[in-house]
Length: 403
Image (cartoon, rainbow, N blue to C red; front, side):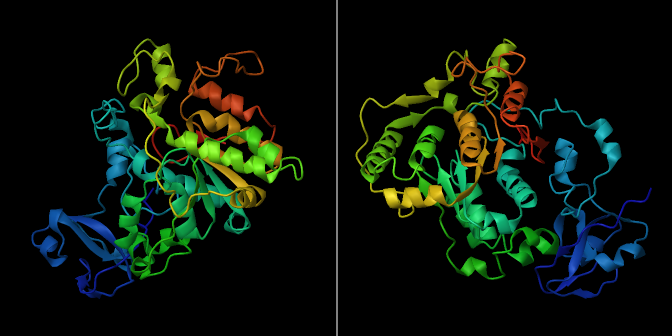
């Protein structure tokens, strides 16, 4: 079977020459990459490394000497997050899968402190964002507030807010860290002319030239997520506003008094300990993952809250009352809390759990009394919470199964 024509990428540079017809490519026209073996063609396309670009319309005119280069994610990992969504212009030969070795050095995890080469760190939030939009529709997402529980640096909420116009609030005790993703914004990495016409449909709130304006920063509830408190606060007239204020002040103060070690960030610790091999990242005996959250001997000096931090009971209650969806992308211990809160509020949730933390939750059991001690049993335990919960595998490496 002949491979389908490649997906085009919008040309971003005036003056580029099509490597097939040699006509000038105008900005915005669809082009796709080719690997060239004939002498001199690379120079024509003004592209180092043997890759040239041509009109999508010229695809049927291909002759000997030109081939579509293999996607680097496909060749390195055996999968491409954008292939299924028809957003990748490169080739994905099925024959390459026969030679892919998941145990190769390119896919091994490194010790803590090393830079990973896997795809999940750079694409997980985007893949999850698109999955959420496909599942719940953009209109529903924009009808209220999305809670991004365990949102960490805030990347997922940043993407939802700035690329889709969805009000997303980060719920995490740690400070947000948006420096890198804001730098991408200011380089125009999310603009239609940069991502192309296929992928830009997932960035409806971004226009060419957006890099000239400042991006929005998502609101941040700097606290540990508690389903019981959410349910309690939403019982109108039951909890006095003064009590909500006291809780919020205590929660914010507590969040500033904890420190996070590498063990607190370690994934797959429980599975590794079960197999008697220790953690793959950083080692250790896995005796108690809650040791990753420890009180500091000395309290840090109080620092002023960020401009987007939720600091008043009015803001907190407004956010909770308008919440339409709860998300959790690798939310650590908050996975069960997310499901409990969503079911209590009768709203949907989307969750990609990671760490099991079985020693912190020893009473968790499946319907058949099996102890929840692996990632697979954790996913099943969460799915058993409601008959309408569905599971799906997302297109990124690492823990990518959610419901």
